[in-house]
Image (cartoon, rainbow, N blue to C red; front, side, top):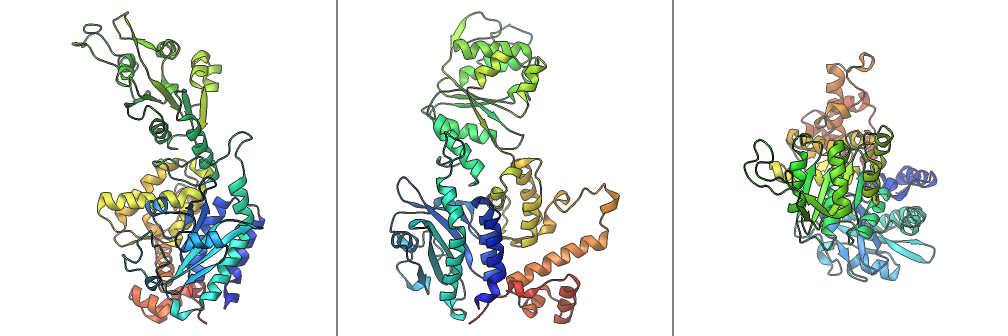
Length: 497
Protein backbone atom coordinates (compact mmCIF):
# COMPACT_ATOMS: atom_id res chain seq x y z
CA UNK A 1 0.00 0.00 0.00
CA UNK A 2 1.03 3.59 -0.57
CA UNK A 3 1.30 4.14 3.20
CA UNK A 4 4.57 2.22 3.12
CA UNK A 5 6.03 4.97 1.01
CA UNK A 6 4.91 7.90 3.11
CA UNK A 7 8.38 8.15 4.62
CA UNK A 8 9.92 8.48 1.15
CA UNK A 9 7.36 11.06 0.04
CA UNK A 10 7.86 12.94 3.30
CA UNK A 11 11.61 13.11 2.57
CA UNK A 12 10.91 14.44 -0.93
CA UNK A 13 8.59 17.11 0.47
CA UNK A 14 11.17 18.10 3.10
CA UNK A 15 13.86 18.56 0.44
CA UNK A 16 11.57 20.72 -1.68
CA UNK A 17 10.53 22.83 1.31
CA UNK A 18 14.18 23.43 2.20
CA UNK A 19 14.48 25.26 -1.13
CA UNK A 20 17.12 22.92 -2.57
CA UNK A 21 17.93 23.31 -6.27
CA UNK A 22 16.54 20.73 -8.67
CA UNK A 23 20.01 19.32 -9.34
CA UNK A 24 20.47 18.63 -5.62
CA UNK A 25 17.03 17.02 -5.29
CA UNK A 26 17.07 14.67 -8.26
CA UNK A 27 19.84 12.27 -7.25
CA UNK A 28 18.35 11.23 -3.88
CA UNK A 29 14.78 11.21 -5.24
CA UNK A 30 15.45 9.01 -8.27
CA UNK A 31 17.61 6.70 -6.16
CA UNK A 32 14.85 6.56 -3.53
CA UNK A 33 12.29 5.56 -6.16
CA UNK A 34 14.50 2.56 -6.91
CA UNK A 35 15.59 1.55 -3.43
CA UNK A 36 12.51 2.45 -1.37
CA UNK A 37 9.68 2.14 -3.87
CA UNK A 38 10.95 -0.49 -6.30
CA UNK A 39 10.59 1.70 -9.39
CA UNK A 40 13.79 1.32 -11.39
CA UNK A 41 15.49 3.35 -14.14
CA UNK A 42 13.64 6.43 -12.89
CA UNK A 43 14.12 9.30 -15.34
CA UNK A 44 13.24 12.99 -15.47
CA UNK A 45 12.98 14.43 -18.98
CA UNK A 46 12.45 18.11 -19.84
CA UNK A 47 11.42 19.75 -23.08
CA UNK A 48 13.87 21.92 -24.97
CA UNK A 49 12.39 25.41 -25.14
CA UNK A 50 13.58 25.95 -28.72
CA UNK A 51 12.39 22.82 -30.56
CA UNK A 52 10.24 20.93 -28.01
CA UNK A 53 12.45 17.83 -28.03
CA UNK A 54 12.60 15.88 -24.76
CA UNK A 55 16.02 15.24 -23.26
CA UNK A 56 17.10 13.49 -20.06
CA UNK A 57 18.03 15.79 -17.19
CA UNK A 58 18.70 13.04 -14.64
CA UNK A 59 18.27 9.28 -14.36
CA UNK A 60 19.06 6.48 -11.93
CA UNK A 61 20.29 3.21 -13.43
CA UNK A 62 21.31 4.58 -16.85
CA UNK A 63 24.87 5.16 -18.03
CA UNK A 64 26.00 8.66 -19.07
CA UNK A 65 26.26 7.55 -22.71
CA UNK A 66 22.64 6.35 -22.58
CA UNK A 67 21.56 9.64 -21.01
CA UNK A 68 23.29 11.68 -23.71
CA UNK A 69 21.93 9.79 -26.70
CA UNK A 70 18.22 9.75 -25.77
CA UNK A 71 16.13 12.49 -27.33
CA UNK A 72 12.43 12.31 -28.18
CA UNK A 73 10.65 14.41 -30.77
CA UNK A 74 7.34 15.98 -29.70
CA UNK A 75 4.74 13.22 -29.53
CA UNK A 76 7.27 10.43 -30.08
CA UNK A 77 7.02 7.28 -27.94
CA UNK A 78 5.32 7.08 -24.57
CA UNK A 79 7.24 10.00 -23.06
CA UNK A 80 6.52 12.22 -26.07
CA UNK A 81 2.81 11.39 -25.95
CA UNK A 82 2.61 12.09 -22.22
CA UNK A 83 4.30 15.43 -22.78
CA UNK A 84 1.97 16.28 -25.67
CA UNK A 85 -1.30 15.20 -24.02
CA UNK A 86 -0.53 16.01 -20.39
CA UNK A 87 -1.96 12.61 -19.42
CA UNK A 88 -0.13 9.78 -17.63
CA UNK A 89 0.44 6.48 -19.44
CA UNK A 90 1.00 2.94 -18.16
CA UNK A 91 2.53 0.26 -20.40
CA UNK A 92 1.78 -3.05 -18.59
CA UNK A 93 4.32 -5.02 -20.63
CA UNK A 94 6.96 -3.18 -22.64
CA UNK A 95 7.65 -6.27 -24.79
CA UNK A 96 4.03 -6.33 -25.95
CA UNK A 97 3.40 -2.65 -26.70
CA UNK A 98 4.50 -0.95 -29.93
CA UNK A 99 3.93 2.51 -28.44
CA UNK A 100 7.13 2.08 -26.41
CA UNK A 101 9.91 3.55 -28.60
CA UNK A 102 12.72 1.78 -26.66
CA UNK A 103 15.48 4.17 -27.72
CA UNK A 104 17.79 2.62 -25.15
CA UNK A 105 17.22 -0.84 -26.70
CA UNK A 106 16.21 -2.29 -23.34
CA UNK A 107 14.19 -5.06 -24.98
CA UNK A 108 17.24 -6.12 -26.98
CA UNK A 109 19.08 -6.51 -23.69
CA UNK A 110 16.35 -8.78 -22.32
CA UNK A 111 14.79 -6.18 -20.03
CA UNK A 112 11.02 -6.40 -19.68
CA UNK A 113 8.40 -5.08 -17.30
CA UNK A 114 5.95 -2.22 -16.98
CA UNK A 115 6.67 1.40 -17.85
CA UNK A 116 4.90 4.22 -16.02
CA UNK A 117 5.16 7.84 -17.19
CA UNK A 118 3.51 11.00 -15.80
CA UNK A 119 3.71 14.65 -16.86
CA UNK A 120 5.59 17.22 -14.79
CA UNK A 121 3.52 20.40 -14.84
CA UNK A 122 3.42 23.69 -12.98
CA UNK A 123 -0.04 25.14 -13.32
CA UNK A 124 -1.25 24.68 -16.89
CA UNK A 125 2.30 24.36 -18.30
CA UNK A 126 3.89 20.94 -18.84
CA UNK A 127 7.68 21.04 -18.62
CA UNK A 128 8.55 17.39 -19.03
CA UNK A 129 7.92 13.84 -17.81
CA UNK A 130 8.83 11.59 -14.89
CA UNK A 131 8.99 7.88 -15.70
CA UNK A 132 10.16 4.58 -14.22
CA UNK A 133 10.12 0.81 -14.79
CA UNK A 134 8.38 -1.80 -12.66
CA UNK A 135 10.34 -4.98 -13.29
CA UNK A 136 7.78 -7.27 -11.56
CA UNK A 137 4.45 -5.83 -12.76
CA UNK A 138 2.45 -9.00 -12.04
CA UNK A 139 2.85 -8.53 -8.27
CA UNK A 140 1.78 -4.90 -7.93
CA UNK A 141 -0.96 -2.45 -8.71
CA UNK A 142 0.51 -0.25 -11.43
CA UNK A 143 -2.04 2.44 -10.72
CA UNK A 144 -0.43 2.86 -7.30
CA UNK A 145 2.91 3.40 -9.05
CA UNK A 146 1.27 6.06 -11.21
CA UNK A 147 -0.06 7.79 -8.08
CA UNK A 148 3.36 7.82 -6.42
CA UNK A 149 5.03 9.27 -9.54
CA UNK A 150 2.25 11.86 -9.76
CA UNK A 151 2.91 12.96 -6.17
CA UNK A 152 6.68 13.16 -6.75
CA UNK A 153 6.15 15.09 -10.00
CA UNK A 154 3.83 17.51 -8.22
CA UNK A 155 6.35 18.05 -5.44
CA UNK A 156 9.09 18.70 -8.00
CA UNK A 157 7.01 20.98 -10.20
CA UNK A 158 8.04 24.27 -8.61
CA UNK A 159 11.73 23.32 -8.64
CA UNK A 160 11.43 22.26 -12.29
CA UNK A 161 9.77 25.55 -13.22
CA UNK A 162 12.52 27.46 -11.40
CA UNK A 163 15.17 25.33 -13.12
CA UNK A 164 13.74 25.95 -16.58
CA UNK A 165 13.01 29.66 -16.29
CA UNK A 166 15.69 30.77 -13.82
CA UNK A 167 18.76 32.79 -14.77
CA UNK A 168 22.33 32.38 -13.54
CA UNK A 169 23.27 36.05 -13.90
CA UNK A 170 21.27 39.13 -14.93
CA UNK A 171 22.60 38.81 -18.51
CA UNK A 172 23.16 35.08 -19.13
CA UNK A 173 20.54 32.37 -19.01
CA UNK A 174 22.06 28.96 -18.16
CA UNK A 175 20.61 27.29 -21.26
CA UNK A 176 23.71 26.65 -23.37
CA UNK A 177 23.96 23.36 -25.20
CA UNK A 178 26.12 20.88 -23.32
CA UNK A 179 29.42 20.21 -25.14
CA UNK A 180 29.96 16.53 -25.97
CA UNK A 181 33.16 16.27 -23.93
CA UNK A 182 31.73 17.77 -20.72
CA UNK A 183 29.57 15.99 -18.14
CA UNK A 184 27.22 17.61 -15.65
CA UNK A 185 23.72 19.05 -15.43
CA UNK A 186 24.12 21.12 -12.26
CA UNK A 187 23.15 24.77 -12.35
CA UNK A 188 26.74 26.01 -12.11
CA UNK A 189 27.78 23.81 -15.05
CA UNK A 190 24.85 25.00 -17.15
CA UNK A 191 26.13 28.51 -16.56
CA UNK A 192 29.51 27.42 -17.91
CA UNK A 193 27.86 25.84 -20.98
CA UNK A 194 25.99 29.08 -21.67
CA UNK A 195 29.23 31.08 -21.57
CA UNK A 196 31.04 28.54 -23.76
CA UNK A 197 28.24 28.63 -26.32
CA UNK A 198 28.31 32.43 -26.29
CA UNK A 199 32.05 32.94 -26.83
CA UNK A 200 33.08 29.84 -28.81
CA UNK A 201 32.13 31.14 -32.30
CA UNK A 202 34.36 34.22 -31.90
CA UNK A 203 38.14 34.64 -31.80
CA UNK A 204 38.02 36.37 -28.41
CA UNK A 205 40.76 35.53 -25.92
CA UNK A 206 39.36 33.45 -23.04
CA UNK A 207 40.78 33.07 -19.54
CA UNK A 208 39.69 29.92 -17.69
CA UNK A 209 39.85 30.24 -13.90
CA UNK A 210 39.43 27.50 -11.33
CA UNK A 211 41.11 25.04 -9.01
CA UNK A 212 43.32 22.27 -10.31
CA UNK A 213 41.35 19.28 -11.59
CA UNK A 214 38.14 21.14 -12.50
CA UNK A 215 38.37 20.44 -16.24
CA UNK A 216 39.85 23.60 -17.74
CA UNK A 217 41.50 21.73 -20.60
CA UNK A 218 38.20 20.05 -21.51
CA UNK A 219 36.50 23.46 -21.65
CA UNK A 220 39.33 24.74 -23.86
CA UNK A 221 38.71 21.80 -26.21
CA UNK A 222 34.98 22.62 -26.24
CA UNK A 223 35.74 26.25 -27.12
CA UNK A 224 37.96 25.14 -30.00
CA UNK A 225 35.45 22.58 -31.31
CA UNK A 226 32.66 25.14 -31.21
CA UNK A 227 34.60 27.73 -33.17
CA UNK A 228 35.19 28.31 -36.92
CA UNK A 229 38.78 27.21 -36.19
CA UNK A 230 37.74 23.65 -35.30
CA UNK A 231 39.35 22.29 -38.48
CA UNK A 232 42.62 23.93 -37.51
CA UNK A 233 45.16 22.68 -34.94
CA UNK A 234 44.59 22.69 -31.19
CA UNK A 235 47.99 23.11 -29.54
CA UNK A 236 48.43 22.67 -25.77
CA UNK A 237 51.24 24.19 -23.71
CA UNK A 238 51.64 23.54 -19.98
CA UNK A 239 53.57 26.61 -18.86
CA UNK A 240 54.31 25.09 -15.45
CA UNK A 241 55.91 21.95 -16.94
CA UNK A 242 58.49 23.76 -19.11
CA UNK A 243 61.73 25.11 -17.61
CA UNK A 244 62.26 28.86 -17.89
CA UNK A 245 65.34 28.23 -20.08
CA UNK A 246 63.34 26.65 -22.90
CA UNK A 247 59.84 28.11 -22.55
CA UNK A 248 60.50 30.90 -25.09
CA UNK A 249 61.90 28.43 -27.61
CA UNK A 250 58.86 26.18 -27.12
CA UNK A 251 56.41 29.02 -27.58
CA UNK A 252 58.08 31.05 -30.35
CA UNK A 253 60.63 28.67 -31.93
CA UNK A 254 64.31 29.29 -32.55
CA UNK A 255 66.86 29.69 -35.34
CA UNK A 256 69.78 27.38 -35.91
CA UNK A 257 72.73 28.35 -33.72
CA UNK A 258 70.72 30.72 -31.54
CA UNK A 259 71.90 28.84 -28.42
CA UNK A 260 73.90 25.76 -27.51
CA UNK A 261 72.12 22.70 -28.84
CA UNK A 262 70.08 24.59 -31.45
CA UNK A 263 71.32 22.54 -34.40
CA UNK A 264 68.43 23.39 -36.69
CA UNK A 265 65.58 25.83 -37.10
CA UNK A 266 62.52 24.91 -35.06
CA UNK A 267 58.97 26.22 -35.24
CA UNK A 268 57.34 27.13 -31.93
CA UNK A 269 53.88 26.28 -30.63
CA UNK A 270 52.39 29.57 -31.86
CA UNK A 271 53.46 28.79 -35.43
CA UNK A 272 52.16 25.24 -35.12
CA UNK A 273 48.80 26.62 -33.96
CA UNK A 274 48.47 28.98 -36.96
CA UNK A 275 44.84 28.96 -38.13
CA UNK A 276 43.71 27.24 -34.94
CA UNK A 277 43.84 27.59 -31.17
CA UNK A 278 46.65 27.60 -28.63
CA UNK A 279 45.86 26.63 -25.03
CA UNK A 280 48.26 28.10 -22.47
CA UNK A 281 47.69 26.15 -19.27
CA UNK A 282 48.93 27.50 -15.91
CA UNK A 283 49.67 30.89 -17.42
CA UNK A 284 50.47 32.22 -13.95
CA UNK A 285 53.74 30.25 -13.94
CA UNK A 286 55.31 32.24 -16.78
CA UNK A 287 58.42 34.24 -15.89
CA UNK A 288 58.63 38.04 -16.32
CA UNK A 289 60.58 38.00 -19.61
CA UNK A 290 58.23 35.51 -21.22
CA UNK A 291 55.25 37.55 -20.04
CA UNK A 292 56.59 40.57 -21.95
CA UNK A 293 57.00 38.57 -25.17
CA UNK A 294 53.56 36.97 -24.81
CA UNK A 295 52.05 40.44 -24.36
CA UNK A 296 53.61 41.50 -27.67
CA UNK A 297 52.11 38.47 -29.42
CA UNK A 298 48.65 39.34 -28.10
CA UNK A 299 49.02 42.97 -29.17
CA UNK A 300 50.73 42.62 -32.54
CA UNK A 301 49.66 39.07 -33.54
CA UNK A 302 53.21 38.28 -34.57
CA UNK A 303 56.16 36.42 -33.06
CA UNK A 304 59.94 36.43 -33.32
CA UNK A 305 61.90 33.21 -33.08
CA UNK A 306 64.73 33.08 -30.54
CA UNK A 307 67.85 34.29 -32.37
CA UNK A 308 65.92 36.23 -35.02
CA UNK A 309 64.53 39.75 -35.36
CA UNK A 310 62.23 38.83 -38.25
CA UNK A 311 58.56 39.13 -37.23
CA UNK A 312 56.30 36.25 -38.25
CA UNK A 313 52.54 36.94 -38.34
CA UNK A 314 50.37 34.31 -36.65
CA UNK A 315 46.61 33.82 -36.79
CA UNK A 316 45.94 32.13 -33.46
CA UNK A 317 43.14 32.20 -30.93
CA UNK A 318 44.54 32.24 -27.37
CA UNK A 319 42.85 30.39 -24.51
CA UNK A 320 44.68 30.67 -21.20
CA UNK A 321 44.03 28.91 -17.90
CA UNK A 322 45.24 29.24 -14.34
CA UNK A 323 44.55 27.91 -10.88
CA UNK A 324 46.47 30.78 -9.29
CA UNK A 325 45.23 34.11 -7.91
CA UNK A 326 46.45 36.45 -10.65
CA UNK A 327 45.13 39.51 -8.84
CA UNK A 328 47.28 38.72 -5.79
CA UNK A 329 50.25 38.03 -8.07
CA UNK A 330 49.79 41.46 -9.68
CA UNK A 331 49.77 43.05 -6.22
CA UNK A 332 53.08 41.26 -5.53
CA UNK A 333 54.46 42.36 -8.95
CA UNK A 334 54.72 38.71 -10.04
CA UNK A 335 52.29 39.08 -12.94
CA UNK A 336 52.08 41.99 -15.37
CA UNK A 337 48.80 43.96 -15.16
CA UNK A 338 48.88 44.76 -18.91
CA UNK A 339 49.15 41.04 -19.74
CA UNK A 340 46.38 40.24 -17.27
CA UNK A 341 43.99 42.67 -18.96
CA UNK A 342 44.89 41.28 -22.38
CA UNK A 343 44.10 37.75 -21.22
CA UNK A 344 41.08 38.53 -19.08
CA UNK A 345 38.84 39.55 -21.99
CA UNK A 346 36.26 36.80 -21.41
CA UNK A 347 36.82 34.97 -18.09
CA UNK A 348 35.06 31.69 -17.34
CA UNK A 349 35.12 30.27 -13.81
CA UNK A 350 35.14 26.48 -13.48
CA UNK A 351 33.41 25.48 -10.22
CA UNK A 352 35.05 23.00 -7.84
CA UNK A 353 33.36 19.61 -7.52
CA UNK A 354 32.17 20.41 -3.98
CA UNK A 355 29.95 23.13 -5.51
CA UNK A 356 28.40 20.74 -8.05
CA UNK A 357 27.56 17.69 -5.93
CA UNK A 358 24.58 16.96 -8.17
CA UNK A 359 27.11 15.89 -10.83
CA UNK A 360 29.13 13.50 -8.66
CA UNK A 361 27.12 10.36 -9.47
CA UNK A 362 26.84 11.28 -13.15
CA UNK A 363 30.62 11.66 -13.33
CA UNK A 364 31.10 8.46 -11.34
CA UNK A 365 28.91 6.49 -13.74
CA UNK A 366 30.87 7.92 -16.67
CA UNK A 367 34.24 6.95 -15.17
CA UNK A 368 32.95 3.45 -14.31
CA UNK A 369 31.96 3.05 -17.94
CA UNK A 370 35.36 4.29 -19.14
CA UNK A 371 37.41 2.06 -16.83
CA UNK A 372 35.20 -0.96 -17.49
CA UNK A 373 36.30 -0.71 -21.12
CA UNK A 374 39.92 0.12 -20.28
CA UNK A 375 40.45 -2.74 -17.80
CA UNK A 376 38.00 -5.36 -19.05
CA UNK A 377 35.73 -5.07 -15.99
CA UNK A 378 31.96 -5.52 -15.72
CA UNK A 379 30.90 -3.16 -12.93
CA UNK A 380 27.17 -2.52 -13.41
CA UNK A 381 26.07 -0.94 -10.17
CA UNK A 382 27.30 1.17 -7.25
CA UNK A 383 26.21 0.04 -3.78
CA UNK A 384 24.29 2.50 -1.61
CA UNK A 385 27.02 2.86 1.07
CA UNK A 386 29.52 3.66 -1.70
CA UNK A 387 27.17 6.30 -3.09
CA UNK A 388 26.83 7.82 0.37
CA UNK A 389 30.62 8.10 0.68
CA UNK A 390 30.99 9.65 -2.76
CA UNK A 391 28.29 12.22 -2.02
CA UNK A 392 29.57 13.19 1.44
CA UNK A 393 33.28 13.61 0.52
CA UNK A 394 34.58 17.16 -0.05
CA UNK A 395 36.78 16.36 -3.14
CA UNK A 396 39.75 18.70 -2.68
CA UNK A 397 41.27 17.29 -5.89
CA UNK A 398 38.02 17.89 -7.82
CA UNK A 399 37.08 15.82 -10.88
CA UNK A 400 40.62 14.52 -11.33
CA UNK A 401 40.56 13.05 -7.81
CA UNK A 402 37.15 11.48 -8.45
CA UNK A 403 38.46 9.91 -11.67
CA UNK A 404 41.44 8.39 -9.85
CA UNK A 405 39.22 7.08 -7.03
CA UNK A 406 36.85 5.41 -9.47
CA UNK A 407 39.68 3.81 -11.44
CA UNK A 408 41.11 2.34 -8.22
CA UNK A 409 37.68 1.07 -7.17
CA UNK A 410 36.98 -0.53 -10.55
CA UNK A 411 40.36 -2.29 -10.46
CA UNK A 412 39.69 -3.65 -6.95
CA UNK A 413 36.12 -4.73 -7.75
CA UNK A 414 35.90 -8.44 -8.60
CA UNK A 415 32.18 -8.57 -9.29
CA UNK A 416 29.63 -6.32 -10.90
CA UNK A 417 28.88 -4.17 -7.83
CA UNK A 418 31.23 -1.41 -6.68
CA UNK A 419 31.21 -1.48 -2.88
CA UNK A 420 32.20 1.14 -0.29
CA UNK A 421 35.33 -0.78 0.74
CA UNK A 422 36.62 -0.52 -2.84
CA UNK A 423 36.93 3.25 -2.42
CA UNK A 424 40.17 4.80 -1.09
CA UNK A 425 40.66 5.16 2.70
CA UNK A 426 40.52 8.95 2.31
CA UNK A 427 36.78 8.64 1.58
CA UNK A 428 36.03 6.30 4.46
CA UNK A 429 36.10 8.89 7.23
CA UNK A 430 38.39 11.23 9.19
CA UNK A 431 42.08 11.30 8.50
CA UNK A 432 43.83 8.17 9.86
CA UNK A 433 46.54 10.16 11.62
CA UNK A 434 43.98 11.45 14.13
CA UNK A 435 44.43 8.99 17.09
CA UNK A 436 40.99 9.85 18.44
CA UNK A 437 39.26 8.38 15.42
CA UNK A 438 41.58 5.55 14.36
CA UNK A 439 39.61 2.45 13.37
CA UNK A 440 40.90 -0.94 14.39
CA UNK A 441 40.64 -4.17 12.42
CA UNK A 442 37.26 -5.09 13.93
CA UNK A 443 35.75 -1.75 12.96
CA UNK A 444 37.11 -2.00 9.43
CA UNK A 445 35.84 -5.56 8.94
CA UNK A 446 32.51 -4.55 10.45
CA UNK A 447 32.10 -1.76 7.92
CA UNK A 448 32.78 -4.19 5.07
CA UNK A 449 30.35 -6.74 6.53
CA UNK A 450 27.58 -4.17 6.91
CA UNK A 451 28.23 -2.99 3.36
CA UNK A 452 27.80 -6.53 2.01
CA UNK A 453 24.63 -7.17 4.03
CA UNK A 454 23.02 -3.91 2.87
CA UNK A 455 23.79 -4.70 -0.75
CA UNK A 456 22.47 -8.27 -0.46
CA UNK A 457 19.22 -7.02 1.10
CA UNK A 458 18.87 -4.44 -1.63
CA UNK A 459 19.48 -7.02 -4.36
CA UNK A 460 16.86 -9.33 -2.82
CA UNK A 461 14.35 -6.57 -2.00
CA UNK A 462 14.50 -7.05 1.72
CA UNK A 463 14.16 -10.87 1.65
CA UNK A 464 16.43 -11.94 4.54
CA UNK A 465 16.47 -15.62 3.58
CA UNK A 466 17.47 -14.88 -0.01
CA UNK A 467 20.11 -12.39 1.16
CA UNK A 468 21.52 -15.00 3.55
CA UNK A 469 21.77 -17.54 0.71
CA UNK A 470 23.55 -14.99 -1.46
CA UNK A 471 26.12 -14.39 1.28
CA UNK A 472 26.41 -18.14 2.08
CA UNK A 473 25.40 -17.71 5.73
CA UNK A 474 22.48 -19.07 7.76
CA UNK A 475 19.27 -17.15 8.31
CA UNK A 476 20.03 -17.10 12.03
CA UNK A 477 23.39 -15.40 11.47
CA UNK A 478 21.76 -12.97 9.05
CA UNK A 479 19.19 -12.07 11.72
CA UNK A 480 21.90 -11.53 14.33
CA UNK A 481 23.97 -9.38 11.98
CA UNK A 482 20.95 -7.26 11.01
CA UNK A 483 20.16 -6.70 14.70
CA UNK A 484 23.81 -5.91 15.45
CA UNK A 485 24.04 -3.25 12.72
CA UNK A 486 20.52 -1.92 13.37
CA UNK A 487 19.40 -2.52 9.77
CA UNK A 488 15.73 -2.36 8.81
CA UNK A 489 15.11 -4.85 5.94
CA UNK A 490 11.64 -3.36 5.38
CA UNK A 491 13.17 -0.34 3.65
CA UNK A 492 14.22 -2.60 0.78
CA UNK A 493 10.92 -4.47 0.43
CA UNK A 494 8.61 -4.08 -2.54
CA UNK A 495 5.00 -3.88 -1.51
CA UNK A 496 2.36 -6.13 -3.02
CA UNK A 497 -1.34 -5.55 -3.45
